[in-house]
Length: 481
Image 1: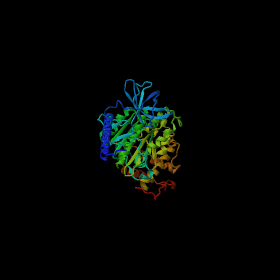
Image 2 (image 1 turned 45 degrees about the horizontal axis):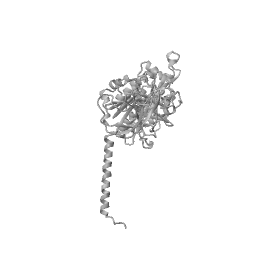
Image 3 (image 1 turned 90 degrees about the vertical axis):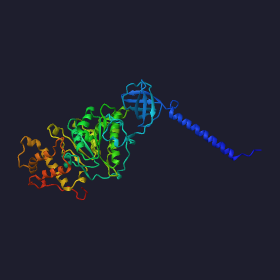
Image 4 (image 1 turned 90 degrees about the horizontal axis):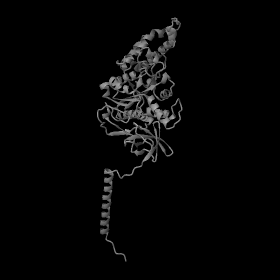
């Protein structure tokens, strides 16, 4: 016979057992928080190193996650997972790799690829890991956003309909840039792209300026900050510097970090100017990583992953849904002045226009050395009025006519009166050339640029040939400011 149980006694015993379990759980939690010596962690070992590529086995980690490698002297070297093959993980170091030894311990660490952002970034200079370089103390920011950004629905982007004053007359008048446009600045080495970029940095109307100096010489970083930005310009700017002596992974992260910071301020409803010098160095950093882990080259040594990452970076700029906008200017280094360079050709296809700088004009002492015939702004018809558009097109026609016949004119082989088009081009060329020249410390605003273009084109002598009239190529059905 089973004795009857007391319900109150059973409840009391259950309460005691529950309290005991709570106490034991609290004790375990306290031990985890205060003493990590007994905590088990997954570790692997370093098996191979080729160039900057490290190979590790013994653990699993997702692409993009971080690992710590213990050096010979106990120092920890941080690396990122960039690929895998079977049980082998390919790691790319973020910093200095001196001190690594065979079979070094490799431990995955928690990393969510988040970057710190906030208003405190204004006036600061950071590296590709968002660590301060200016000696002004730590960054006091609390918000964090993804390094790789969030995909934007193309139907939620506001169209480009408002012009942006960049303070450079040749661009304002002939290649007007709109708010939210992605523009390329194509030039070879020593042609003046950094000078033109500096002019646009100082003269452009924007709430925030984000500058990404990717893969450039370390000397240029300090010169850009002190000589081009200055104290006033730096106060509303964020500079991300990842010079050429940094690892390719840091250079890659520097470009993505600059874009993430620009996205943060755009989402606050601000007008952001993103200047990246250069997009070519970003592509070269990805090429170094891809080739190191065994990806085969496709076009002039560039693997396919380079051409897939370029639009992923560029498409993050543009107009937002809340009135904010990122107007991006990317410099593209054309090696040997080859406009068919793979990176230049790919950038030309994904950007909203390009400004080409001519070495011939630069050597002649004409600055900015904008090649009028090779440059274009694809959104220009949507952001200017009919009169401005027709005058800009007419300017390009006369300028191109002179340039095409310049050799004949210079050697005296052309006889005046032979062609009315060439006669007009000869008469107008000095005025046209003066319109596109400007001192590096001189700012010419939007309205003054348009007025100077109107004045220049009104000086055109009457043409006897009807074909010299302004062409009717403007579509009045489009909306323009």
